[in-house]
Image (cartoon, rainbow, N blue to C red; front, side):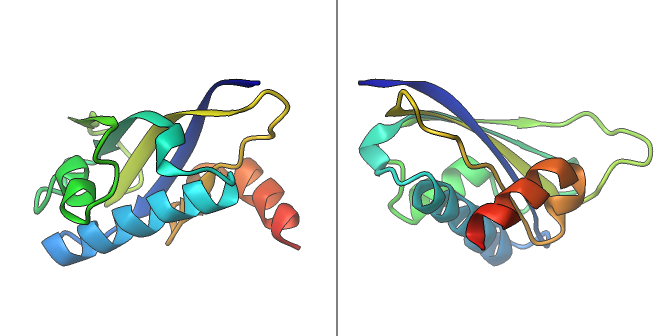
Length: 127
């Protein structure tokens, strides 16, 4: 039996259309891979991005690659926070996994600093 999970992730990106597309795609693919799921398991995805990123909408970027065609996607801009990490795209992916699944969250390309607790746990899972 499956239940609904929320998977978190984040990635730093350059403010170019090509890099946003590449980084969002890699983050999404890694979430699917690490959680042993298919796109049919994805219900919805919420992206947020820091105000310094404006070259491409991450939801549109993912769609342009042919991914997540059936999922509901949404993007919001984060509030500017003094001292916050720049050039960050965050994701909250709602998906169905087996009841006893242990969710795997993905932080990449410098965004590991946002959740060092999760990044360390996830690194141990890889070993």
